[in-house]
Image (cartoon, rainbow, N blue to C red):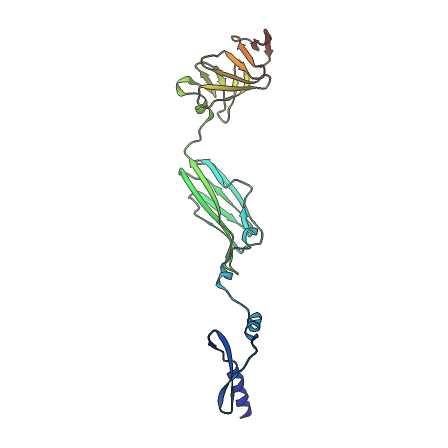
Length: 266
């Protein structure tokens, strides 16, 4: 009987009733329940030693900005249809249990490890694509901030010659040689603005609207020219005009600032 009484006592003392948000304990004595008076600071003391559980704790971002997806490449890429694409990224900070990649367009595939990954392949359809990448920790149900990779896919890249010369001023001679209606013949691999001109040699050609041209020559610096003044060039270095003589074996200018000729080997 004494054992049963002790069990009842322990069980009764373990009951907690909420009244006006205050804790109350009861004991069984002399055939009835009697309230146990507790110290006024017991409630706060009880809360200190009791673990607190919050649902927000289970869905927090992984250490905030200290754990995130990063890449040494830009997060905005422009490529051509069918062009080989290779993008690498990694996790900065704590290790996730997995890396998630979503909205991957057709033609691209992912390769993932614990702390890094890559996206490779080629896209056959032009358009704008947005890929989301984030790390995930299944233990804490925690995510890194989402990393967004933007890819713009065009049918063809704009070639430099298209921006330099209107179509009616340019004729293809084959084998990457072209003829301008006013500038003459030159070679271009159409990958950048460097051309090899029969009279000027290697020069860098720049134009905003295909009307006025800035020409960089490694010996003469920047020159200005357009269709209406050619074969005259304005030299910014000399603050005067140069005249390009008709075709000779060398690059042959007349320098109006010194009233003398300038000759450079091509």
